[in-house]
Image (cartoon, rainbow, N blue to C red; front, side, top):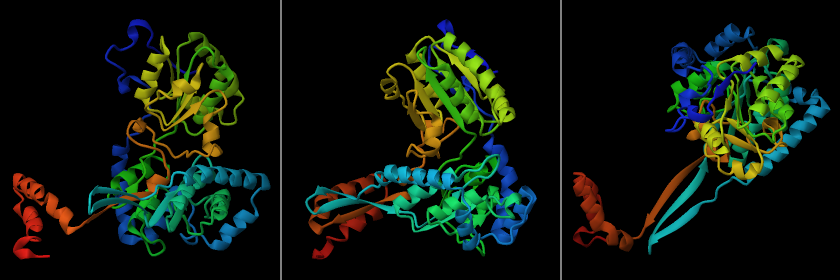
Length: 437
């Protein structure tokens, strides 16, 4: 079911792993830019009417209004299954524990007597949080976006999620219920590129935001790329991906179940097993055949596992396995090896690392306390997952006395002259000319 890449023996590249050697989903954001550009331009010029028109065109339903009535949000919570409510409340509780500890404190450094630099951490004023609504329902994404924004101290939080035919033009009721549990009352029935444009430009119904976060499809990612600069963004999220580094000690049933759990998201989802054991790989293949046949979403799971984005990669040593997973830079990386914690500590590139046989990715998706909005497509080699820090800006506050400036004035003038920017130097010199105080 899942293809193999054999890098054992002489097949392992001497100069290191080329990222292009590894499986990856086709996700051409650049090509999608031309599709979303006219959508974003139309929203910029026609506002809410354009958002509603595109929603009707793409989602097959036209909401009575973009802004979801607070009564509908309250009704969704009242009608929520008690077990789902309890699970969401526990997810929120654990996420708050972790994200509360991420809040940064201001730091003042005395550079010289009379001269200090303070780094202040200030939350963005207003954020737009995107919650997808395609093949699955994601109330957990409401939690993962809202909690760090709230813990950062963001004052204005707006959520957008596509209108659903089955919900009478409202976002899915479980999405609305999650918003209610978190105290979010500004919710919009809008999805896709038009929702990102609504946040970026503002409309009659929705004030513009400073930052947009949250996962979505390729058109959401393209809109975020197009509008970056006008708004801040977290990342251009692509199809979900899991990589598992495993040796012969791993339990094949666990490995197969975890690969399937992410393949369940989308036919483009990536599932990659990197192993030092061909015997384990064979056993995982047998488990995949049995478990996929019994899965509810076996068609999309099969499409994901048999796609070019998924594979088993065989290596000779754990050292080589670490090189492969670092080159792949997975959104989710599981370590199922002997001494898994020590191996996990050596990982450099991953959105999140799950250690040992009892920390599956699905735990992180819902109730570990960690955040599941993570970099995809190899971006974990340079980007981080969503956190409180995503919603904060560092501002340097410079406070120098006259004496402290005088001490360094000569160096400032010298450097300004070296850069042929004499007015820079004069801005310092003028403060000491003619005996000025």
